[in-house]
Amino acid sequence: MFKRIKSVIFGSLVLLLLVNVNVVLAQGEALYKAKCMACHQIHKDGTGPKLFEVRKKWLDGGANAESIYTWVNNWEMSAKKDPYAQTVSTWAPIAMSNFPELKKEEIDAIFDYVDAQAPVVAVTPEVTDNEVVVEDKGPSTWFWVMIAIVLFVIVGVVSKVRRDLKNALSESKSGEEFDQSYSMELRTWAWENKKLVGLASLIIVVALIVLGFMDLNSIGIVENYQPTQPIEFPHTVHAGVNGIDCKYCHNSVTKSKTAGLPTVNVCMNCHKQINGRTSVQQEKIKNIYAAAGWNPEGAGSYTGKTKPIVWNKVHVLPDHVYFNHSQHVVIGGVDCKQCHGDMTKQKETARVLPVSELNEIEGNVKLTKPTLTMGWCIECHGEKEIHNGPLNGKNNGYYNEIHKRLLNNDKSLYDKYLKDGKVTVKELGGWECAKCHY
Image 1 (cartoon, rainbow, N blue to C red):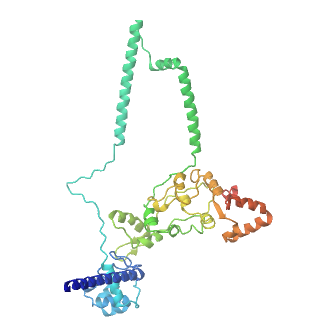
Image 2: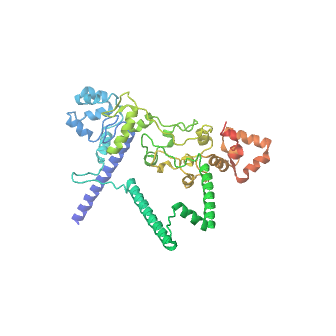
Image 3: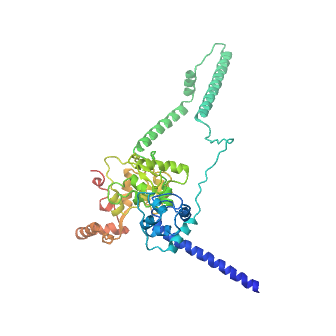
């Protein structure tokens, strides 16, 4: 019985210890994210030096055991009292913020949480000296060219043998020399099969006419258009995994005709701290650093030597077409995915999605005309509602005024608009030519 009681007590102590450790780590995580995360990373230098095992680093450097706590509370005071702290103060030109409200136990909780985070090791495939990596690219173009040449030669030889045999047979029957050319043979066959040749000719002519009109009908269709870009930008990572809002990068979409491309400074807001985990990622992010003129060594610094990024426009409208992003996004309440698709699932920088793919996205107005064509816009204006119910329910001064004018001047027309329970863009002039062309 004594052994059982002893086991219960021991187990309870272990459980309490584990609970206490988890509480301390949770407190440390919350404090780290609130106080430190803006400038410090755990395993990598950023605006400030990395924090992993920083207490050990200070002690190994000869710092006083209490100096690091003083440093967090007031770094200037710590730098005056401790030579090692003075050295740390010169690490970067940016001064650290003071946190006099943090107690020693809270600072330890932060460091305990940081030290509990194991370094992330990027696993890359290794190739030994005796190992050869062969990339299977399938048959080359030259392979198929050679196959085509061989087949062409075989067909030519067989055709020549067949013609020679036929001429020899004719000579043996008539007793005279007979040498019919390919063109004569073809004319003879066509004359003997006039109906079949006429029907085939008619089908070919009709098919060519249809193909010609289909080709003419495809002018201006840019579905699946995707130009190359100077830097790869996986939307699945930025908008999907990290949940970055579209408006963070395209920040003029709510107040301008254009959605705008992010400046390199917007990229650097994150990539000052994030330079990639793998060598491939790091190589790509170097392009951003080159554009910004950023040297990531140490705390990082701007060199002043920039190299602008030249992006290739994807959604290109004709010069005579007017389109205002803010009008659609703010006033119309159109979600970005209606025209651009679900960017959280697009690995590419951007492409013009076919209307069939746009229709698969939940919440999108289902359309039939090809993306970015005039028919596509008109169809959307005919289907998309400005508001469900009377316009004054939209709580917008512009639409309240239209509501008032319709009631005062033509209430029957307004009632007609509301028969389907919504007022569409078309019903308020969205099909007028001057709305998009002027």
